[in-house]
Image (cartoon, rainbow, N blue to C red; front, top):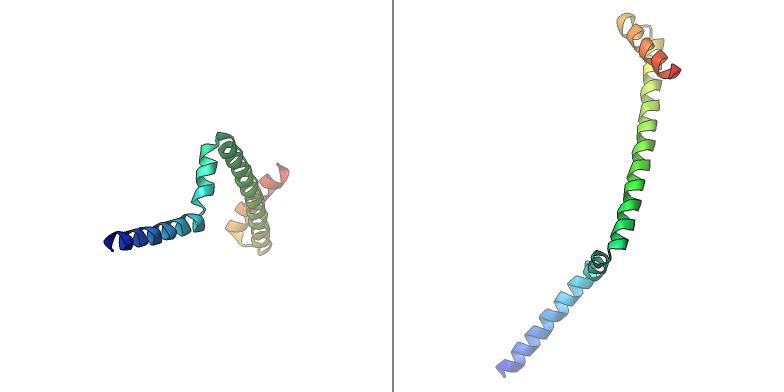
Length: 94
């Protein structure tokens, strides 16, 4: 009787463990970790994607900043306007 309950409990726990492993994709992660080529390719693609994203993001933010600075220059604020005008001229020439 005790042996039957123990087997039933063990079986239930194994099913729960199997469900949790499948739910969290542990099997796929272990498969990827075992293959060095997949790790290299995945990290290479991730690095390229991050680099492209950083480049695009920096370009957009720089363009927005230059537009804002140009608007400030048109307000003709004496000290700040001259300083920003010099910065915008330097950026546009390069």
